[in-house]
Length: 128
Image 1 (tube, rainbow, N blue to C red):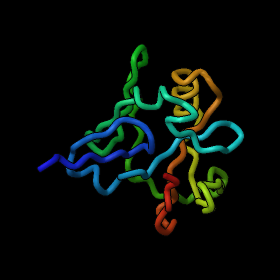
Image 2 (cartoon, helix red, strand yellow):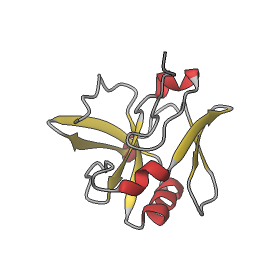
Image 3 (cartoon, rainbow, N blue to C red):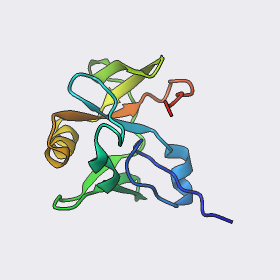
Image 4 (cartoon, rainbow, N blue to C red):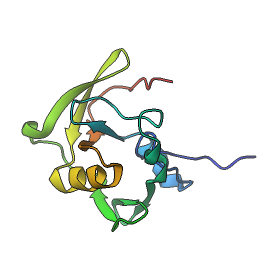
């Protein structure tokens, strides 16, 4: 029997932590044009490891300090809410801010943003 693997950030590292099931593919990384980045477009995504610790999504990558993102934030600031296209679906997302954007941009060496699927968003149909 295999251990379940959850991917809190789509296309990044996986974790077997059982509490991660509720956060599976809750986040994604997009370039500055609003295009979702997958491993085909950006293979270095696989080098970003994630774990859940004390109410935070903890991101680590080679050569980078760790980054902690709060797991459960009440999303009431519409100024950071956007819509992006994922395959044929339009998805409501929330931008995680400049620090997270700087972290992922620095590691991936392209301008990009860490986005969280809005909690009110219905099921996301991730492209294969």
